[in-house]
Length: 259
Image 1: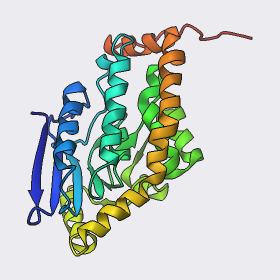
Image 2: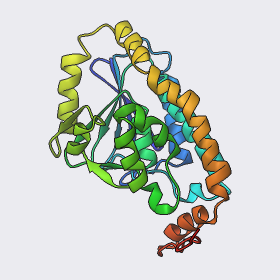
Image 3: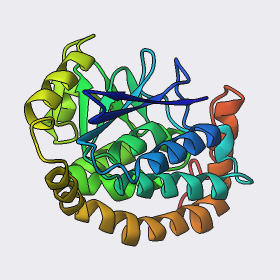
Image 4: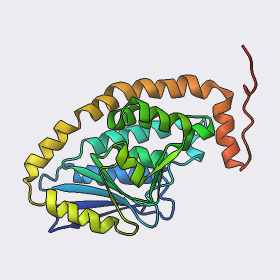
């Protein structure tokens, strides 16, 4: 099993764990496990928080590059974007706890959560542009979380930010020192979630998610069509993925082209 579900704090908190270290790749099997986990929690009205973490040194290296080849990408995006909507419908506040790498599809999963807590040394980013593509879900969700300018910087450059820098741009709610993620999560839960009414937390989360839900319902389908119908018809998209798999520099078809 690539997903493990545990209960803490007298079963008031569910912990969903990406359990395929060290990379915790968000492939079809991982997505199926996450869908099942969040579906199993959907009717739990007694929960005060759902914590999503990665086993091992990293939250997630991202999606499966193999599953982003042209013949597989449509099914991959359909499943991933359905998963993000499932997370956004969770019956309690959702908190992504991030250590190590949180990249690509892994970051998109974290973005579907209400809050992100990260170790100061964590790395969060969307490196897809380096492969000749871009991240559809992050393109829809990052502007909601951090504004259009910072979102464009992450999507267009493919650079990563540390947990410390992510706080400054509003991507991360709070940080933890190296190795202190679980302790900080426990302290935050004890201070701001466990004393609260589960029904108040549930409805407050649903209210606070409205901008995110609008992005998932309205913007993401448009961006997904742009990706599948336009970008994937360009030779560079397939070349970038193939070059990564073959561990060689990409040969962009339009490099040096003039108008």
